Image (tube, rainbow, N blue to C red):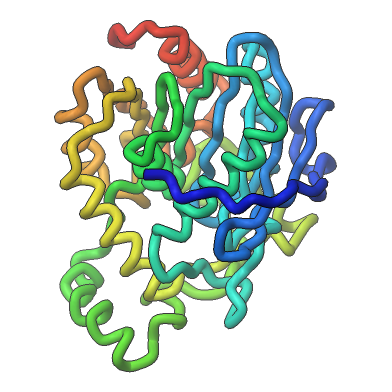
Length: 319
């Protein structure tokens, strides 16, 4: 079941319109989760087709989806996005604000419940649809199991497993098992560290230079949005949640999953296994696409957005 939302008023929050490149009409709100953590929820009003709940991935924030909101508003949908705890302008870990850290993914379930508090007060038009990207795909899948009232869902490169090098995979059990007893849970996970600018060449996110520069510019102009690698505890929690979700039966919600054939961050085999056993589900593999399928080159991206809208409108036929 969904965690009980904290009974609190929402308050206006900053929205960084200068880097969002989103619709002119936008607002953002602060709300506190049940444990007191303050998260940020953004809203772009749209047409009469309903509202998309955008669940971002790790390191992400509301403004990163300004362009997506612009395109979806043009297609008749409003959109809501969230800064999960520990990223964007939401509350960060006390021990190190540039480290992604949770003790358990149940903390994100509290964030979803807090987001519901905002939805109840701003009352965006129904039906509600879901787009869950990367880590947001794991949070979104759990939210469907918890009863989030979604009509149809889309997952883009969902984090239902994490890619690891053969060496890291071979030692992961030992590292994770010893991290708690050795007091290493709040250290950066192996091969990760503080946030650093990424070069476009051979980046694992997108093949499109314009969208790569769009994402890079947001963090450069607002450094508070930057986030480095995850803690060992976060990785441990993510692996546990991924394993748990894959062992659960698929929800009843019809779901379209979109995966780039060049994916290098999440685990494609886990995604294919999940979708192979999802009645009413479909998996689309996008040739030439990297992890950020919503931020690929226009010719590729426009086709993906058309497929998402077609899915939301109830056509589950093959693309």
